[in-house]
Image (cartoon, rainbow, N blue to C red; front, side):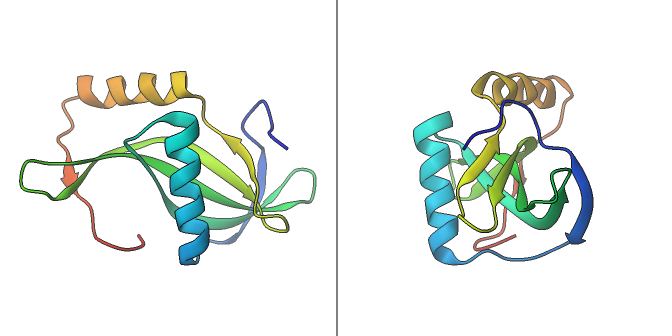
Length: 120
């Protein structure tokens, strides 16, 4: 089930959290397969949507490996929502939106920053 527009969040149930390695790996594969390389799902939150459904909301960071083999990020360029019950992606920002937001970050003069290893 994929929603055509960004779900409306009614309430943040848990501000910060972690996802397990299996879901992290599945989301990485989802992003690579459906949006291309260079994206990392991060900063999970448990939220309640307007249809009373609970979901995991994650930001999408534009990431890359620099010349020193360090994981770097430009910043948040989109969002991803995962159904809590089925662990299926409900919504993901479109490829066009991700590319547009990367360009906005680059044009703003923001410099890439090192990203921590593991969950963040």
